[in-house]
Length: 144
Image 1 (spheres, one colour):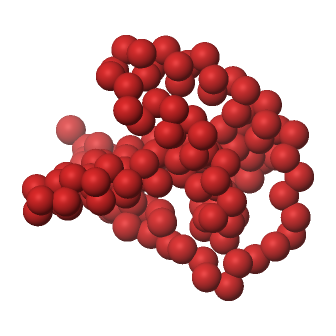
Image 2 (cartoon, rainbow, N blue to C red):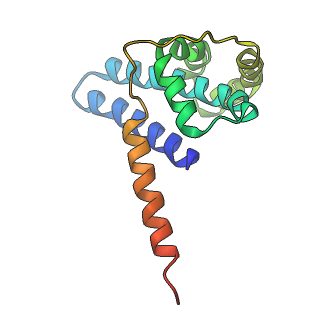
C-alpha cells in the first residue's frame, strides 16, 4: 500500500507541474514540482528510520504532515541539485547523494512538536490507494 500512496503522490506532483505549465506559467509548475520532490526525498530518507522503529504507514504520514516545513527543507538540497539536470546525470547524482540523506535522517532527533497547520499532503493519495487496494482485493478473491 505504501508504494501505491507514494506513487500516487508523485503522479499528483507531475500533474501539479503540468497544469500551470499548460496555462502558461512554467516557472510555477517547476516550483510546485520541486517542493513535491523535496518532500519525496525526505519521505524516502526517513522511511528507513520509520521502518526500523516499526511505525505504521498512518503514523509515518501523520508525523510527516505535522512537520511538512521541516521535511521540505530537509529534501530541498537534493531536489534542487537534481531538478535542472537531465535524466542520467540527475539519477547519478541522486544515487550518489541519497545515502547521505539516509544517514542524516537516522541522526535526526525530531522533537515532539505538532504544527497547528498540518498539511494533509497524503490525503488524496491515501484515499485512492485504499480504493485501489479494496478493488484489487475484491476482484482477486472471486472464486473460480
